[in-house]
Length: 505
Image (cartoon, rainbow, N blue to C red):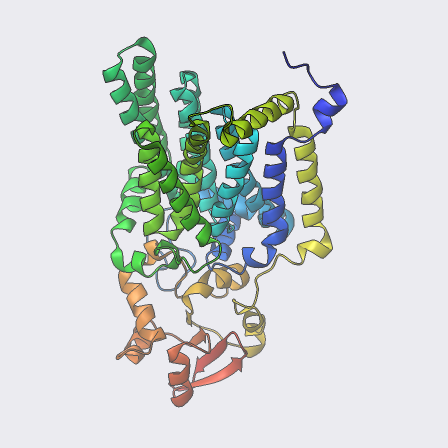
């Protein structure tokens, strides 16, 4: 029997899981600091909506933030995550938002590692695949509500796999998670996809082997799924949340013109990690063939299809499929005709001995201490100043708006709408921002018609009563405006031009 480590070592030595989680936290805070607030146009909107909810102590049901849709009914399907981002910003500015994002990212990475350990994998193998999952999750590492979906998807996988192993009582955790998830992000549908997969697996197992355990799991999944559905309705939108979330996916024009919904670009360095995972998983499956768990195969194939269809689903693939890939890899290493000479067997033997040695360590105290130190460093004045919107956004131009004296209704670049809400609202209600599911197809088409100076662009400006425009130099409309007598440029830099309508026009 393995003797317990002395108490100083038990409490002060880090475990592999603690190191992986702390590494994920540090990666988000210190290696991605330049891209956290310069990689997406929606971040500013989520912060603004959250701070407005906290200030007014009410959840908006109509649009408050644009002049094009002002007063139109609004479905607040991300309000809870926006409150978290807004609250973090009120506490510590953009550095606080960065800390919250890092905590969500590290939490998801840690849960994937914990899932593999609970499945009986040697911890060094769990560390290797946990790192692979970290890289794939980093593909969509941004301060946005989808971070809650990645975390909750990881929690669902852990709970469902534990229930499948016999701990059916773990299913009690799913409805509270779903209640928070449905109020935090529309990705809560992933929870129901996972429930459906595990329910189908349980039904097949109960049919083949109708013992008490299989039947109890099946009944538990049915009850948990029903309660989760009820929990998903406990939102400000109620039934409308489902209709809105599913309905958006049918708006092909909007989905096809949103970068994160497009298929992966495998020339990107990070996305190559997903390609490598797909190839590796396929090879391992081919090696195992008929010995593959059909639930794992279904999870791998289905979520790989989701990720190939839309880049934003790659982190979900990492959460769902990586534990299965690790299990299959262990099985491959164990398969050999001569087990005493197998390198794979020797590796597994060493890995299991390491796991037994580590099992006596607490791990979390030193991991928590490291994360607290990293948090204090991130919030220090010198470091906090690095968390800022960069040159992708019209920071300098917006700073000059008061001096320029521009007023009235703006036409703004699509990806700048969130920053305008963050930096200039309520003085500047936007024309549009990244929440295309709210603005709808017609307004997005009007936006495109103006930006690309399509025939009738002047009529579109007149219809929306645009008084001034904030556009990038490379936008086709910029070159057209420079040649027209109706507009004059009052500001310009390498990022943004400001045009105002000439007096009397």
